[in-house]
Image (tube, rainbow, N blue to C red):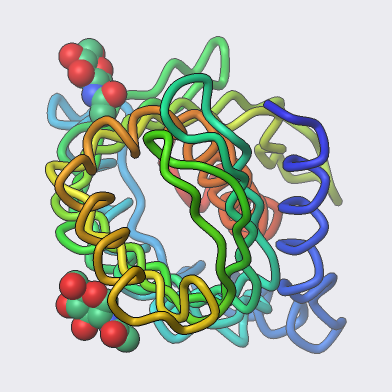
Length: 262
Ligand SMILES: *[C@@H]1O[C@H](CO)[C@@H](O)[C@H](O)[C@H]1NC(C)=O
Ligand SMILES: *[C@@H]1O[C@H](CO)[C@@H](O)[C@H](O)[C@H]1NC(C)=O
């Protein structure tokens, strides 16, 4: 990945998240823990023969519960998720243009369904598969370059919608101790994305030339697979960083014993 992409996304996500939870909230959290209802998350027993299923269900529940954010965990809303800036680099094939998105509102993540998951406790690795029926990226874009040899230039609102996107998640963590409790610190979060279809809508291409704009949007949509596949790496890196930040915000505040029993 272009290192600039990583930096912009990382910075953006950091800015859009609350840096810390204040003392009162932590206090509140520990109160609840004392009362035995530790957090939003159900716990799973490693001895349960259906442990993987339990984790899968709880992951999905957690995503749904975080929809509106959690003041207790200092999390902003996940639906839509605000991302100030995203840069998807050029591809190696037909997409000779960088896509620069600002004021991104990502809709649909909390509609994700967890399909399966597994945990390697010895190595602190969580693997999960999910599907998101509709992932809508609304943003202001700027582009100048070529796609499928056609010139493309514009700036304005856009909507990139990914339909039935299968996502494989690999989350590599390390254990850290804080105040006598063990937490997971997310070291690396990688994703692979396979949408069933992608719908592009870039408004105001060519200084608002509607006819040309419509033609280019049609070409992009007729060739969505080729176009998306060429820049999929960029989307995967960006989503990896977004998910990394989200996972970090949760795992840094919820101790392992509040996620897993025994
Ligand atoms: C974005 O596009 C999708 C698919 O075409 C559509 O369902 C959705 O309503 C659009 N969102 C906006 C804000 O236009
Ligand atoms: C997820 O991994 C499986 C192998 O475990 C693979 O068959 C599948 O294509 C992958 N899906 C995605 C979205 O990368």
